[in-house]
Length: 504
Ligand SMILES: [Zn+2]
Image 1 (cartoon, rainbow, N blue to C red):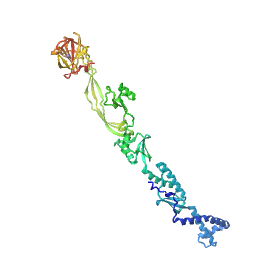
Image 2: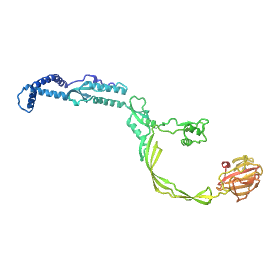
Image 3: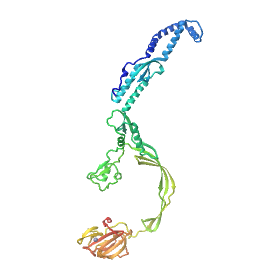
Image 4: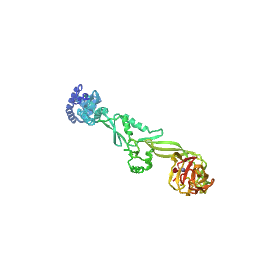
């Protein structure tokens, strides 16, 4: 590089064939004022006659007059025309390539100095214009002379070619430097492809939400590949997005501390059980947002269902609070034209431009009960058959020295205490049944059954309807029992389940 940098521009320019022509011109120029003075003197004396004679000469008339004067004035006319229209000049070439035509060599030197100064500042080293600079004398039309600006531009183009080799592109997002890449075309391709990722056939506009700018830089230590730039632009730009649970934290407190609702926090942590936070759990408290976000706007057309209108009709055969569908309607269809805005593919806004009904829905007819609900109807929730200590829980246990499965819970009671129906229903068994002793079974409206065992006496009989909380028996220790208690059992579709899951 250093060797290639020639200093020829500082050498004296050569002046080959133009030399002689130049000297003749300089001579004429020196003499011209003398001729001009003579001409002025002569015309002062001869006045209008001179003009007349000149006219005659032009017209080819052989009028009398001093021949020497005619020759002289014709030469002067040519000389004056030449000095007015033409200028002595130099055709400037660099390595044989035309740079321009200048009247003053100093102008070229000045243009070079100016560009070299700029180039040195830009590139960070001593920049020199390269090539063999030559000047050749010529006469040129004054209007053909190269302007100082044109001259500078010529040398700036050379600087541009040199700096193009060294030029790299710094990428800035919202004014913050992300990194530097070598190739501007590849960078532009990358930016386009980042937009294309979210562009669909319905997309009407796409833009970056952040301001992306590039600026040329020349001295760079770390250069990124386009792949690295892509990763940097897609990396999370939303700061720290996680929070690690410490002792004493609650889900609500974490949501509050991060200025978000509990449901927002839940949405960011779908797999976290909010009631079982453990110290050290890592929660997402902010969305991951790429450094460079893409907003797309799509115009879309889709078909949407129209819900059935519901008509309610009174039905005295149904209990109050219950209902049933008499006629199920058919949903309608509508064509919707909407403009949807997405940020990084996530919908952020939807404007419905028009809705066209394609098919009207048909109505659903719903019967609503008006009949007064009897006291004995099931409420769907249970009360304790008797208040007392649980002496045996549901599931596997050791009793009488061996393992057995306990199908209910045992609630201790005093002899003769009131045993009450857990919910309304129909007594489907009342009598003695093996190890249960004196047993009452109530079948509730949804088919679930409750068992009350070991009673001393029964107060209801099979087929009787009972209401929630109604006394059905007196506590005892009949059947396979070691003391006075109520064996309470719940059966769902025939299988015993843990009664504690149903009791308040
Ligand atoms: Zn029991």
